[in-house]
Image (cartoon, rainbow over all chains, first blue to last red; front, side, top):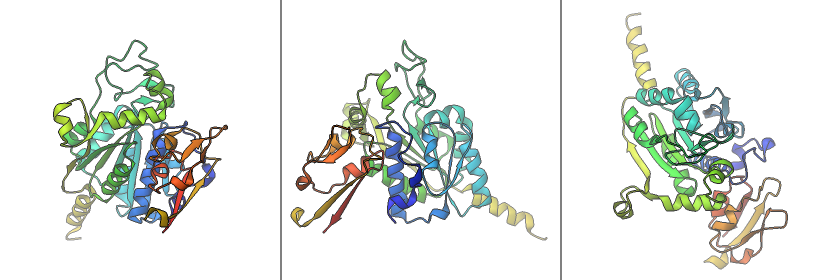
Length: 267
Length: 68
């Protein structure tokens, strides 16, 4: 199937700004699904609120556009009732880790078989460029005109500590890696998290004088390095990309099926 | 190798928003933005079919068809 067969063409062109990284995530994710050859009817995409969450409107799968931060909670419900379906949960950085921070860590802890894609553009774009828990120290935002004093989360470390069994990071510049990691995350049995560093030229880029979309992509290339590269040893400020965690632990739905079986014994 | 390929660029002008990402990262400078800020192919003969434009387009507005 061509990737156009996976989208709802009637809603295009999409509502994202010119050069928005979320479109690149959509592009990469569709290619991952195309390579895996998944049936559209076997995929459920659940999203919350924000620019990133509008992604669910554009794909021709089963889609749920739910409430702010609670996409993982809805996805947990769907997965528990229909464990044979593939659940993909794209979220923004604020949606996943501020409003939905608790859902995020507990979904990771349970190791339920969902694929969480965190589209991290380090800002709340839809509401006008307020800083998020991923903006980081020293960043300018509408609500931090004299620069932000909050430290940021590290999504990879947070997901790892919370118990996610697949954790990866990439950027919208590294499109082949992006598609490849999403593919592996979907295949992984357990809670998988893919952080995609994305660009918001309209707010983050403009407030922080990072130039246009292409300039922001170049920055992404320059500020990251593959895990374990030599460059990281001499330039410790570089952000690592790749797969950080990949392990097999009991999956929540399978465990629950086991509980049902035990409870029904003798009936 | 490269010369035996037949490469066709299909650009959806209605979907293109003129962000310029494809133009900037094309390794062969095949693309440019026209006066309406929509992408167009100016040097199709130089295209090596790497598809980086297609993969990086946030608007799904470029398709590269390659016939070997």
